[in-house]
Length: 421
Image (cartoon, rainbow, N blue to C red; front, side, top):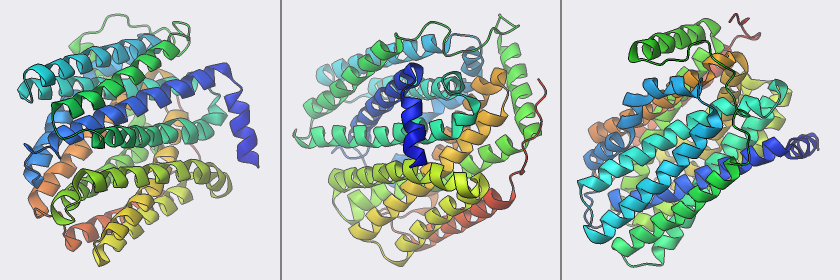
């Protein structure tokens, strides 16, 4: 098969193999960390399990990077991105150790939220660094295939890490030792990522030397504005960002509903939610296989249309009936559709955005990612009942997916806009 040949070719490259390993380790560790936080915030006895409490937790967890994002994105276009990866993972190790100490000595308190905020904010910065570094390890014409491998398997690794962490948690009784064990597992994976990243040379992941060496708040905001103007002028990356944000809003809303349904409607709690994460990860893996083959034949716009239409079908399934089977079936389809769309969108942004703006562009990407997820929590708090079951709510987002599918098919320019830098 052509895809097997292409994958084999890429995996023979030492830089690609090392980058591949970093992505797996970073995101599987992040999945373990997030599973521990989900247990603490959503499924522990002291959590309320209401739409409002979930929305508040999402805001608390995602707000910091959204605020500081513009002021760190510029560093990704100046600092060696290898350094950014190593420092970020090192900080996550330290913060996670402190969280464990607080949980074991004091118990659940506001300090845990603050530390979790910092760790998750660093994770978004790390993912932005990885996104901006990818063109440094593969050729431009191989970005589609690399995006099918790295971000998608990375997302699957997050799911597998989360399932592994949840599985470990089920071996312990509820309490602080269960939470500490899940967090400890993530620490070992973070350390592995650091060791692999040390194999890169300091400037190997970019960026090229930048003419401005001093960063101030004014300079940062001005350059962020320039990056946004550049992306808008390119059209295709701008539309890709819009589709990503609205898709994330829709997916996040269903994510909130799945927590409520698992806990309050089907009364299966952490066990069912772990199954949802596992099935979604399988969907991510299927997207790896499907996307490069289909895009090679029909192009990215048509694939975006089909992938988002798959998400719309998933919504239709849960509109008709809510059960464990329909929830898991919808999760599988959402995994395939969401990640399949993401592969195409990431490729468009990376291929058609000038290198000197990639760091800030992916910072904007992650800010929109977080804002959309926080917005999803707010919508859930406003419109979802306590048990999470609302056919009208699901139907509305099914329509949103249909509209996005139409935009994906007809909105992208056939020929990339020429780039002048």
